Image (cartoon, rainbow, N blue to C red; front, side):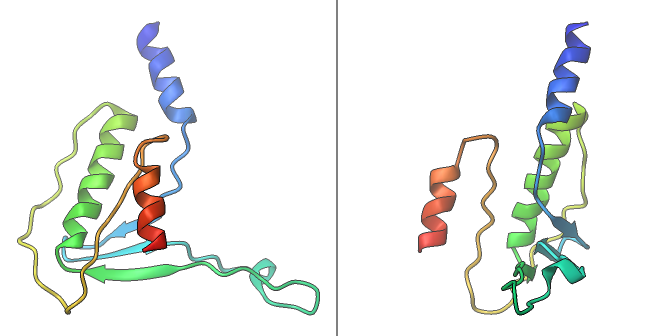
Length: 113
């Protein structure tokens, strides 16, 4: 009975991460809304979503965030392929994830930076 209750509590926690993990070297993150409701009109400024393609070592961080969420929700481990990170470009990118209220200050400061 306790096992079932824990599983129900886990399922009720919503996860708004939007990740597409392609091949260990490329990932997409963010929102991508396609609807007339998001158009700019005379009465509405519309809505802007940000969707990005990332490549390089940060993809391994996104993989780890996904695996950790998968294990938390399902209670089962998941093993993704572990390709060596390929350096791409000259920008530094970090992946920050939050669980409930943890890490929100860190994410807030990253946005400000």
